[in-house]
Image (cartoon, rainbow over all chains, first blue to last red; front, side, top):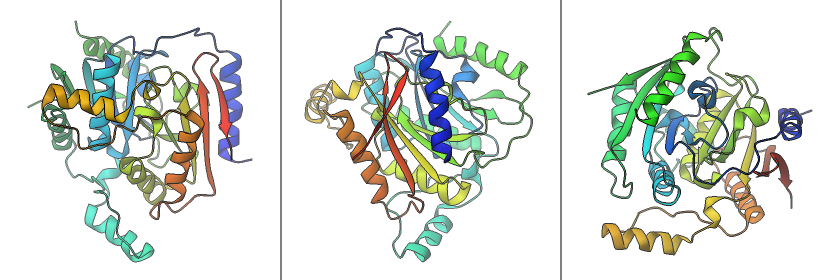
Length: 164
Length: 164
């Protein structure tokens, strides 16, 4: 049995117990979270979110690229969210390689080089500030009164705000 | 108090109860989930995931753009995942507008047009197939033996596999 099959069995159990009723499309709490895809970062658990509460946008690093700017524009313009929370975390995979090295490895193996930036970084706080800056400087995301960035500690479960 | 402050209070409670210990960086179940950012889609709850189990990648629509291909390449090449699960869902916001219309509205308001495709779609199953196809045709994602796509029903909590 594949892992996918195992997770599908869990999904059947979830559906059997499902009693949320009909929830509205716009997030109840009016917030969008942008976080790293890391398996140890449980956004629903961390923030005590229930189904229907918040948009959750995730990728490798929790960095802000064109796709996160697209998702945030849709989240705010069409679905009414007003606050943005960004989360990077300690022991992140993005700290373990360089863009040049990773892309060269792929180039060597595949014969062509990826058409994307890998978005590796060396300083967590500085990259949170970069991601905040990419949002605040974006002309298509209208609401920027509350764009706050954090580092999550995977050992302690604690969030620390990045300021300055 | 902002919603962000309210969620930070929840996060303090999460940290106070945190007892996961030191979890490894690679996802225990070797799987990456790509899902829509929709607030009603609780990926951890649906699949019974615990901290450390799976990469979770999310954006508006659960569509596959360059950033998801980047994240999946990093997930498989550097962190050992081997299976991919894609999830779209019923009552999706992406079914409620067109790329042209949305971008024209922004153009009218901001004065410039977004540099991204909004990735709206009209047929859920067909867009799941599109997303699967963007992965299987990508040269930089090495493991494609298990790339399966689903539609989640937000009213019933049930997953339906998209085939063909």
